[in-house]
Length: 322
Image (cartoon, rainbow, N blue to C red; front, side, top):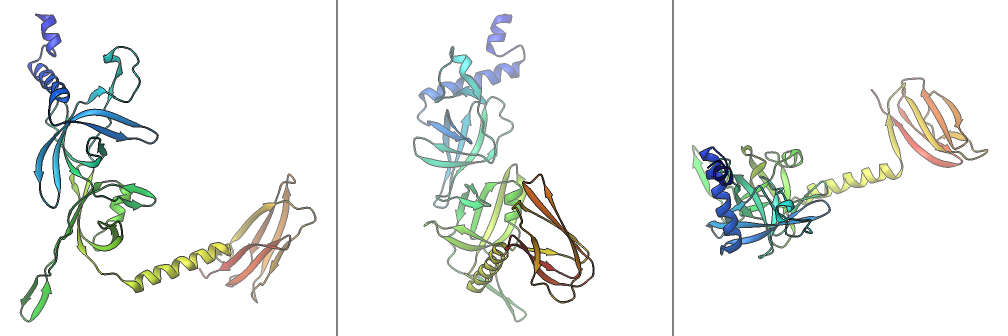
């Protein structure tokens, strides 16, 4: 009897129930019509596992299904190392992750895990948008609902007229510090449309604590602000010009240290100095490989000057008021 109980999952009744449900799932992964293959992308590899994808709710706006996959299972694209049980590994999937449904070549986002299910990983999944959102060079796949508002509802009371806020687009995206900082309320963000072109949207509401590891963002359609885009372009050009001229901002009485590769018989020089600036310069050679100059500002004047080494501009220094 003890061996039978251990084979069935253990002496506790709940353990045997968990083992029975897991066996039923593994049978369904082989013979069910709704069984499929999930591809989990990692940094330098991909992992494939059998899974069960059951339909839940399908509308014109979104496609929501249910995912069932064992917590530990055999990876289909890894080489066999011995017995079948020796190839069982953890399935690296959690709320907020995405995977590719191999049979349909579509990407899905895990949005809500059923924590009461102890036999296997069970969660709601939503179909991802066709194009990802790029934040600081990182691509984030998201699920998209809506984007079909065509009218604006106006209201009037006491001779005051206003339009009702319409949540015309809702996003489900992985929650981390980057996405939380990106989607601030009333911030204008640019998101891809069905053609992959970036369009402006205004963030209306963000619910960071409603679902674990998922950020739900409500957006309202916005207009293209050409003047804002032009202003941002000008700021970028100014920043690029500063970097090109190697501008460095300091304050009165600061100490400036600059280093360059050593050139024999070359000199450090200060040129284009504004009137009234007072400073002391001391240059030393370090192991005949690098030479360093220390410039100590001696008064509270503001202005600018250039530092040259070997007749080449090294740094454009701007002194600002404290």
